[in-house]
Image (cartoon, rainbow, N blue to C red; front, side, top):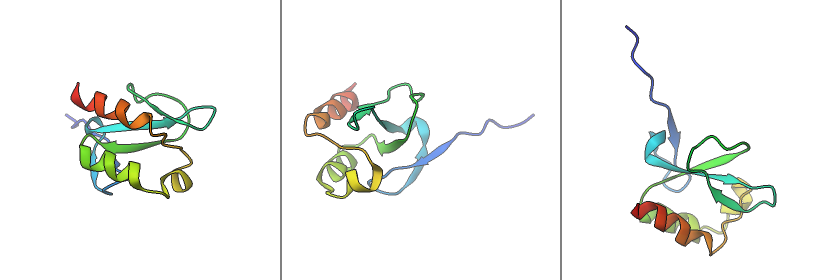
Length: 87
């Protein structure tokens, strides 16, 4: 019997490989702003962040995040991530 493979992704803040279900997926909307992809099935490019406050803060403070990933993290989006973290 084959073992089920758990996909792993890399957090863009801490650069650690973790199982996909332990990460947030942030996708790029049509207008280029970040949206939280709760289902993980949204189309287009996406980046993954750990579900911890340290990685969220690191991504929010990184000035090159938008340049490197092509996704703008608005200051209004950070509370959305923190609310999703609490749930």
